[in-house]
Length: 373
Ligand SMILES: *Cc1c(COP(=O)(O)O)cnc(C)c1O
Image (cartoon, rainbow, N blue to C red; front, side):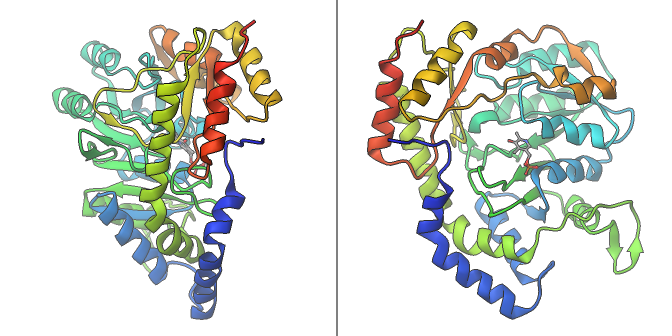
């Protein structure tokens, strides 16, 4: 049996015919950039998230950068963020010339908001919090909102992994003025290529984001800002909006059911299940487990020998990446011990929505019969 982290061919089996007919409609319609499909997808995404406005862009990275710029973040601004995420989270900060300030995570791998509070209390120079709803768990949105209010800082949530996640009934991405998400193929709502979106409750910010994705134009040939070319294209919008968004609830249901089984049935003295925040209705973009650093290779090799693919999210802390060290402008607020625990001992198990019952049972059995060296 082969159990992969992602099975895009199964998604294609289920959706290919509809995707091809969506493609045909776009092709025949003759409008390929910023037409009615992008507008319709943005409306449907905003309605289902729910969020005031959605602005489709070229990738999750661009959504973060455009979100930061729409908030007026630029050189010299300091931003509290997590050392444990996709590099894109920090790369967006660097691209606008700002300075990331890394704060440790909690035991679940999410930015530690208590640590953030300590930093904010003694340091008045922070302008923004950029938390990541990592693995599909919702960061405590109540605490996040309270921090923003108490210290007068902005919030931009990285929701690339949290499509469908809620905190006590409230969607992630709704605390600050702006959130960003990604439709990279592996994400919970994955395009057949690159795509992303800026989410906002503010019509002004939505308008700025629309201008920034389109060469900074406020009107045709009126360039008010140095924008990007980062338009979501009609093809991806049609595929996302007409074929994949309607299937998202079923995909989420399956991810949650698989995660529930893993959490109930994986029983091994050397495999720990990191805590899920108490108010989080997680969307399980990934399923992380933790082992001792010296045992990680043994577990991954064992799984591989039984046909189960696994991965590490993320093996190196962001402040230890060469690109950041070369950039030079970053700060580390205190120890990063919890985040390091994940970098050294995390293993992600397959949790995609196309797993069969037999595959789920196989993953559980393989974990439970691992003879930890
Ligand atoms: C995937 C991801 C991104 C980047 O999205 P792209 O569409 O690949 O640019 C940013 N942040 C997080 C947490 C991600 O998982």
